[in-house]
Amino acid sequence: MTKKTAAINDLSGMGRCSLVADISVLSAMGISVNPVPTAVLTAQTEYEGYYSRDCNADLPHYLSHWSSLHARFDGILTGYLADSSQTSFVREFLKQFKTGETTLLVDPVMGDDGFTYANFSPDLLRDMKALAEQADILTPNITELCLLTGTDPGKFLSSSDPMLPEQIGNLARSLLNKTGKTILVTGLSGAFCGLLSSGLSEERSIKSENRIRIVSTDNTDSKINDLPAADANIDLKTDDSPAAGSNTDFKFNDSPAAGSSPKIGNLLVNSSRETLYLFPHEKGHFSGTGDLFAAVVLGGRLSGWSWDRTVQTAGSFLSAGVHASVKAGTSFLDGIDYEKYLPMLTQDRFRLREAAEV
Image (cartoon, rainbow, N blue to C red; front, side, top):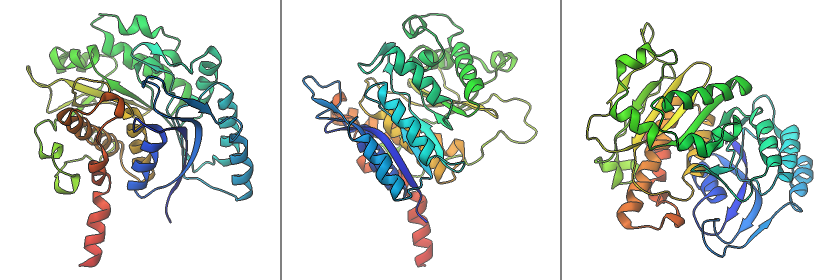
């Protein structure tokens, strides 16, 4: 039976983000999407002169009608909430539709790059913290991680402390202690990955109290950046834990060499592992990448993928789209050119179909 998800997010007419990203990615992964728009925008909020209307008056109808239809969901994804009042709707939605078999992914959209978005308020932060405690998967960026842990994001991101990587790990672990589920800190670049690439030695890391396993995927010069994934050969791990008998939780896979390309990372922290996944990083901040990442993560887990496979697929998918967008000169506001790389998310389905036809 086809897996079903409810995607609670905004609908932006331009910018290739939010529900547009959720629907296209999850559908490509063979998962049915039931969208719940929290707001309707002519374009995502970085466009000048955009128009936005919240859907507060419409949301209760989703609860009443879907309840009458006895709707059930294997996954629920929450993204942009227009204001704190919508967290009340989400709480009621979860009461009605989240079961012990439902995977809840919360993308706590509140800010980025040390600044908060226009929707932010102390009430939204309070309610987002409560929502985070219900999540099975939480995908904050560094700014949102700071907000959720009571840390000043501006001061934190302006720090030149060489222990910054360890501090980010500590924040993620403190959030893990409150939720007990999986934290995926997204879009780690700049100081964090720079320190890892240039000076964090394996010897020092092994001696560290909190060890982070590092997986580096370098697709910069691969044909993955120029061809649909059906023609690419990507080696994705399927093991969710380090090898049995391993004497350390920290290892470099293709460890960054001096002079190598810049990296962007996603840090996964849960009760059984801490892994930093590194991918090629190109200059610029494209709209919608966080939405695409979250959708692939939820789709991967609903498909039974391991954490390694899930995060590596999500990161490789985004890297290919970003590289193509930079090459084509696509506007940052318009999001990444990801559409032709959707086959990366469906390779197994193509192979299974071909096997069945033989």
